[in-house]
Image 1 (cartoon, rainbow, N blue to C red):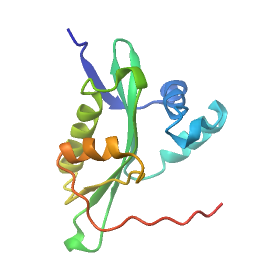
Image 2 (cartoon, helix red, strand yellow):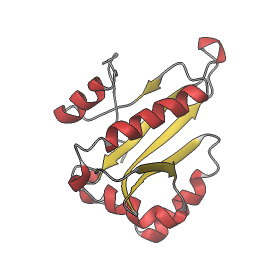
Image 3 (cartoon, rainbow, N blue to C red):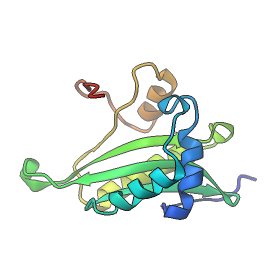
Length: 150
């Protein structure tokens, strides 16, 4: 029997577990902020009007996380849009439906906010992630460009 999964907004107490997930090799090459730096940044994120980090909680531990930003818009007749980012599931918990539940939760939150779209960006090398997102109904749309500023 699969343990139940709860998804909720993250608190500062969740930061050690979130950092543990961010330390996975496929996520920022295993580099993370220190706990003190993360606490300072987390407090700063609270000033964003509609940006939240969520955690997936199962069997008394955090097994996944994602961030969701809802942006107010002037185009599309003022209809907001959303971006989901920093999606990660603990290695030992993958292929159990946790990522699917997290993404469904993100989609539900975006719909509740009246968003006309939910966007994400994923590294071109992550073929498995692409298949996962496509299985949820995401479609490739346009191009994603970045410029490294560091």
